[in-house]
Image 1 (cartoon, helix red, strand yellow):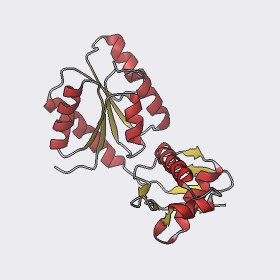
Image 2 (cartoon, helix red, strand yellow):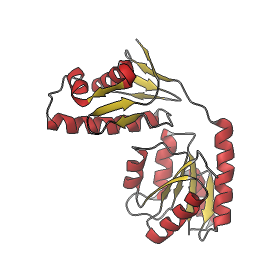
Image 3 (cartoon, helix red, strand yellow):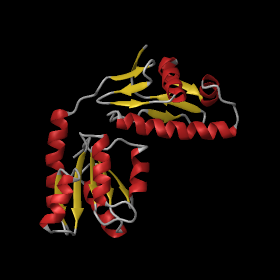
Length: 228
């Protein structure tokens, strides 16, 4: 089975994380794994996921906090908690943190796949591709919700959107942004693009918004409607 569902798994037990990823990958899902909240944030800077499967006991930020934080940014994200914590109080806290489903360890492949199949049906029935609007006056990017941009971020999106084939070499983007054309500015642009990826996700854009062109520049992969 080939599926459009994209799943991120946050589990600090390496063996269990690999087993879960293998089971879901074999079922045809796009799956990426992380062992911490920090790694999850890195995954979301590169992909827009439909589902996150989260353990509660994690190094650093715990699963409850992760669920709450991601729920604030994306009301459409499906959050599944998979944990050894089985008390009623734990489950209530999980749901109050934003979980859509609370599964307890050990979980069978059959139960996990059934849960993903149920989520996929809901996602497919409600999947829409939002119009993406860049408002130059308010400096906001809007799809299913609005996020604020700074001046350079607006210029990057606008210049790529208006360019032929929606791509520009990095030095041209730096020139438009008023930056010096050197290796330091090139590195700064890479950071800026990574932050913009996150803002597209926060705005509700599920598709990857940018593609790096072999180190020579960037291409905008989504249609952006520009308003003054």
